[in-house]
Length: 275
Length: 66
Image (cartoon, rainbow over all chains, first blue to last red; front, side, top):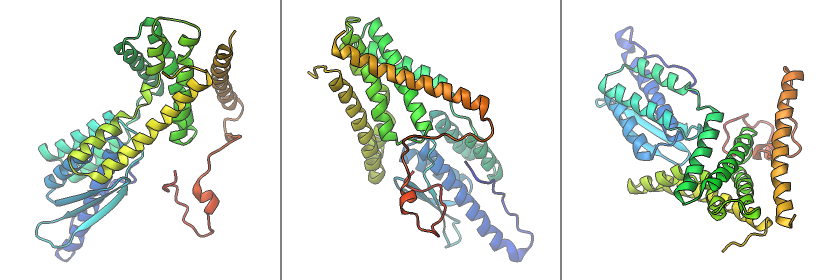
């Protein structure tokens, strides 16, 4: 993910001091932009990205500014005694939401600030974070299904409804994993996953299994709700990152519309009453 | 069996059959085509640049239409 590990350039002679210093500024700007890009990509809010990156730049002895756009991040750094500023632009990393990665990156920023990590060590740590393997697919599949079955219980579903929701989530989420693996459009994937989950969970209603089939049907697609983008959008509004907030909100709203369409299609095909 | 029951069985059956087919396909490809196996899709979602590519355009895998 991170292309190469930059090394700090040490000036060898006095007349190369300026050039070496400029090169270090370039490398630091690139590192901070990569860091901000990955942090945004793994689901951090704009204010979290700004604070963490500013903290590291301050600890490394640079002035810092950042512009966060929906798909790109611009980082400027400068030395206090020099008028020149250096900018690095990165596209937001498409790594998917990961709280684990988010926590590791936040910890790195505190280690740079509190433990005074030098630049090469910080870069090495960042590279090892980039190489962190994602959570196992089977593990995620089972835990998501359990979590959604628990949701069903929270909404008053009985044990049969929980079982139905567990298996409908298992099928829908597996389909989602396969389709995303195959490179299908994420909106189409959401539509298909919600359609099959809703159809499977409607089995309780159709075959007359359990006492709360309507709760099983309603909660069977909850695992698809993009909660993190919605919450991040609210956080971004509070901190006046309106562009990112709007972008996140629209993205989440489109996914919600797709999953709603899948749910409605399932109910419509099976001839179920909506109200 | 009523019509919704038949539909339910057909839809869930189709999904399970697709999973089964994929598992069998993966197993088969691992056994017989370890080296040069490529998935062949009946229907695929293409990229914008595949339709509007002009010779000389940059071969950028990180394009926005992904």
